[in-house]
Length: 192
Image 1 (cartoon, rainbow, N blue to C red):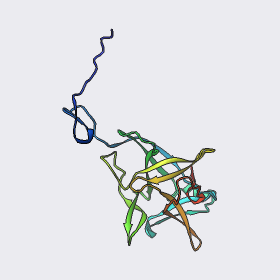
Image 2 (cartoon, one colour; image 1 turned 90 degrees about the horizontal axis):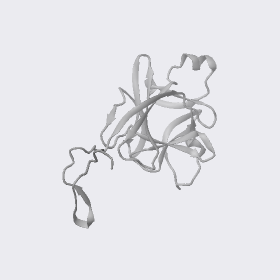
Image 3 (spheres, rainbow, N blue to C red; image 1 turned 135 degrees about the horizontal axis):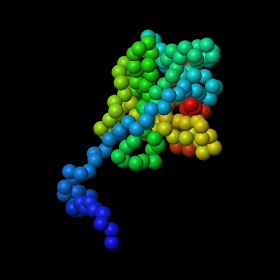
């Protein structure tokens, strides 16, 4: 027999057989905690880079020259990977931020005129996020055969993914709803 101490918690079953802990002092609450940060450029299916332009309040996928990429203004993202106390099949929780001219911006989603809009707001991504947040996306592989391509589902609205939409000559970053879960939409394909 081992000399290890095993923590036991008293529980009780309530109405409809719901489980309650009598003493929950040692238990963690549901939260997202920052685990690591990746530094990447984000590309769409056309190999264009995502470029953030805070002065125009937008982000779009653009053709970028090598010289422009070296300067990196608005192209080099920090992808904040979070661990969560509630493991889920939803994917790896991530948040996006970028530094432009000594200012930090983070990506979030907000409802405007009845539709969800992707925004970049000045500020820092939180180290810990208790519960739900409009900055969290779930990173999922795009398809089973493309391990280096991903899609990012908005955490507060299931079935809504980061994507691009052509608007004139721009390929603007948007949130887009999948009509079916097994649908493959190339506008949602993002690679590092």
